[in-house]
Image (cartoon, rainbow, N blue to C red; front, side, top):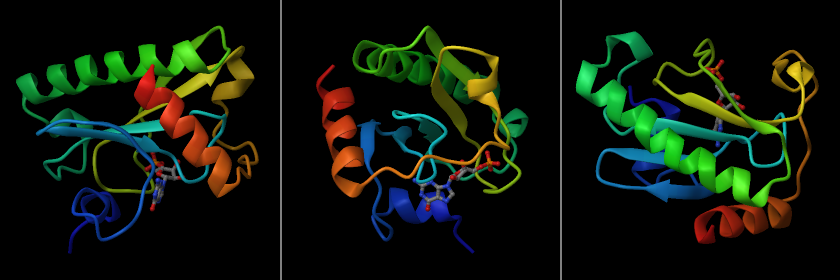
Amino acid sequence: MASIFTKIIQGQIPAHVVAENDRFIAFLDINPLAKGHTLVIPKKEIDYIFDLEDELLADLMLFAKKVGKKIQKVVPCNRIGVSVIGLEVPHAHIHLIPINGINDMNFAKPKLNLSKEEMAEITQQIKKA
Ligand code: 5GP
């Protein structure tokens, strides 16, 4: 069965897409730890990130770098935290999270409740950056 992220790629499930090319896509996390929390994924559905072939993994990270720099331009923060968890969705993804301190990377924290409008606005800002 297709992963929820493959359904997003195929347009079956809506998402706030901030960047996309033929091999990768980046969209806002639906339950963000911070405003601008973004997931970067390969379109090829592979569960575990270290099962990606070397070139795809390297290019995924370079794509994430570009997206992370855009997020940093529009979300005030010290830097963009980069994390891979993968316990919930079996489709490799990198979390990009605007952070000011170590506690901002705590995935056990309650998530933000951003409105659709706020999510749409930050999406537009990141896309334009
Ligand atoms: P992980 O697999 O890295 O533990 O967590 C998966 C992440 O994907 C979570 O942060 C969760 O909020 C996010 N997520 C799960 N389902 C969806 C979805 O349908 N849309 C979006 N945009 N994010 C999702």
